[in-house]
Image (cartoon, rainbow, N blue to C red; front, side, top):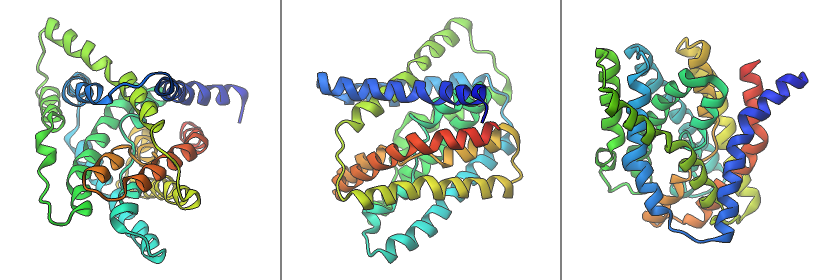
Length: 295
């Protein structure tokens, strides 16, 4: 790899990891409640970001459908392969399978896509993130508690803001300038807030059963990478769309796995350890994946 190419990788990856480090360090200096920040991101700024991004992005419904099907395919492959490995190790499905299935496509994936592939890659990444979130709030909750018929996803503005953004894009509606700028400014808060929150949350997580945590965390990244590669080719994706799918599929376990495990009382400490281990592995692996994709 040339020096210029290496510098490009550094410029893509390190801003994200530096802000994660800021959040991590801040947690050691001052304790705050992330709930208000998370509520702001979930209910206000992320919907604004989605509407702002998608409304300015000429969406092809065929591409949006393909991204959703590809996301489902990645999760399905992770379910089969991860399920077989979890079964062979005689581990709990409820504890060890969700971190293999559901990746951090939001507060880690989106910033990396923005820096690596620009606004177009970022907008396609939003479609992938929304698809992942939908699956996490449905299939993910069912895995944790078989008796739950999950309607959690329909309580979030995320799905509605996606529909609004897609409609505005397809119909080519013009949002009034004042409203458009207000939505865009609120949306701009999302990325740094998400990365900071990720770093802060990681500081609260502890490693336990180290070898097992690193194994499960690594499976999320490597199974995801090969699943993304296979399905991107299977669905004939090319260009930036193909790269987005592969990179998003390769993200470490989502922090939200810990939140749900804690809510449904499924050994959240072990899940936290897997998330921490997977994120540590990603610090070394993701730059290599980005290098592969941009070269």
